[in-house]
Image (tube, rainbow, N blue to C red; front, top):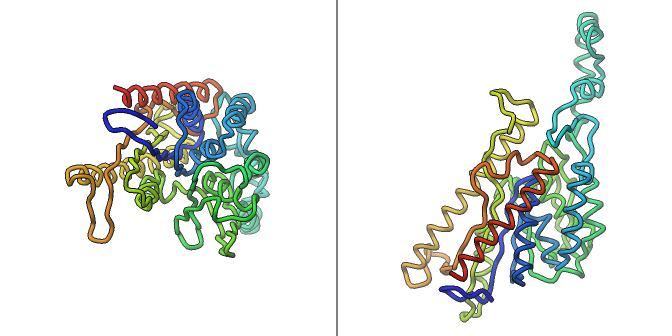
Length: 355
């Protein structure tokens, strides 16, 4: 129970996406554990899924150990690629490796091939490009999930989101939807798989036989699944429950630290991802806060004619603008700093609750 001006006896926690801002969530979870606060419900997407599923299992020691490993091993712990170089936490495309994969020799050889047999060379390159599912392979992430996540260990109600690219639908699932650990891990994997950078997850099977194909990051459709958490709370038929909600938002708009007016391919991808995720999160928060204020003014509830919405004691834990830096950076100092900032902003949340 959290006691403040409005006493809360039930807490919903929403963990948003944000690429390698995962460590910001870790800092928040460490602070929650410090105050012995365990959510009664968790809704997550993308990077938030990876952190909060351990919270849902109460396996926080394993989460902290994995976060420490990521600082040391950086991206190699969760993805590999023959096409990407990394230096000081910054990633860039290895052009020569990409050309080699396309069957095109570098330098003078490239010009000679194009002059003597342009159609053949371009056709071969096009055929090879069609076979390239992504720039990197995040199978190591899947293996980590299978090692640590078990349906039998889920202790707190939990749901995550992924997008099915065949239908375009955002799919919300929880452990109750599965009877197989591997399929559940595939859903978690898909929730955190950035399309284009990593390959789509080929299929996810639910226990009722439903199969979703070509799945990826749930943040593409809903990077701050706060309304899903609201729907869960509104299904609570115990009127005496006083719910609160806290949203951990680790997306903040950024420009690369070394920005000189030009961006390479991966920086452009990262910038696009950051802008989209940030704008969706802001839009979701504004919509919810508007409904929440109307409910408060109406004595605790409001309706859209079809559904009744409660008023919630709602808070956000989020960084300041540009505070977390490039969300694709895995520089060890950046990762540690994100965890530190997660703790600082979570401490501010708890300070406000008892003020």
